[in-house]
Length: 532
Image 1 (tube, rainbow, N blue to C red):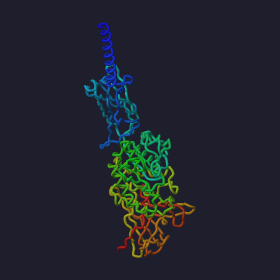
Image 2 (cartoon, helix red, strand yellow):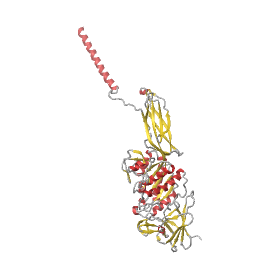
Image 3 (spheres, rainbow, N blue to C red):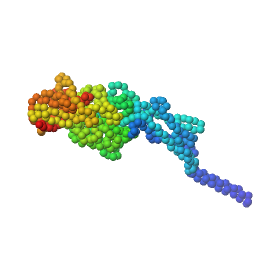
Image 4 (cartoon, rainbow, N blue to C red):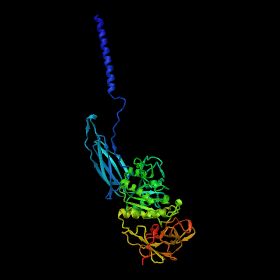
């Protein structure tokens, strides 16, 4: 019997051991991670979200001399003992700084893995036509290596440009340098009623490259950029929001707070790119050339006030807005007199508006300009920008003559004086009349630029002016063929076409100041009675 029990006992013990082993395997398998899945390796380091990009533009600071180049990130490797930043200017050594690293800290809960260490370096780069680059390096006990490099970094000012086709067309007459910048989505095209696809890959590019690849920059914006570069040695970042054949309403911000900053319309696209480029708060000037698509002029002033309000909210440091009063044009085939007058009045109601006259700008083809015309218009705007932001000494007679008063010089209403205002910072200006113009097979005189209206506003007579001549500072005198007692209002260069040549776009003659800047068009200005 005892010989039978002994083997049975061994069998029981064996079974218990096997059962215990199975239970242990199941338990251990449930508590341990699978051994066939490798652990994710930690990177050596990661850059911050605002780590500089190649070709990036940095707006100059409030002092106007430089911008801060900031390089930062997170370091994971415990073997890195130090870091450094090498900065180059025009490919020559400029500055070098050692980056202090915080001491290593270990997290016991993470099996003594060192926690992340932040690093940060800051270096100023000058606001000038120079190109900067940098190299970021790490050192350990055994090696020294550059881990990141960026080049073609530029510092300067931001200019917003928006409107319709006259901000889009044209190209420079001379080659662009490589200092201008823009920030655009190379995968999408802005269309009048919105954006044809979401922003995917906005990148910094030089305006020279953008122009060569056919992206919309426009001769006006590029002309301003070139002239500021050459005149004051400051690079410009052009943030362009102009689109062909658009009304002012199509440039409005979306009133829906959830979509306002998305690139789903013209306004939102410009805002979005400016925000992504980190230049939105740095924009201090804006050029607006638009109006042909609103030539019917219904509530244009109110519409502009709405757009202006959005600009001032979304670009809080905007100081000067340069509004171009449109040229006589066949575009849209509307009579433009009310629109031009509405634009002329903007500077009287909004303090940061500077009016730019397109009158007397040459090389106009009836709707747009040849490249040379955009250069002339850009010169006019550039002189204002140089004066407003760069303390230019070329400050005389920058502003377009703007009608201030019209009054009869005699009781018979045979002579009429037009007095034009001038900027208080400028000396008084002797006006001039440009030569007669041959257009459409006819010779046209300055008298054709004017028309009179009676008390009801109805046009009363044409061809009544015998002579127009400068008369002292900031004034011209109109002499009539005969007394015109029914005339109570006068208009100048307000129509799209010559009165005696229907269908021929008005191209002068013009009233101009000593710089050749044309007087602003005006419509239905009241003529004060003669005072003995």
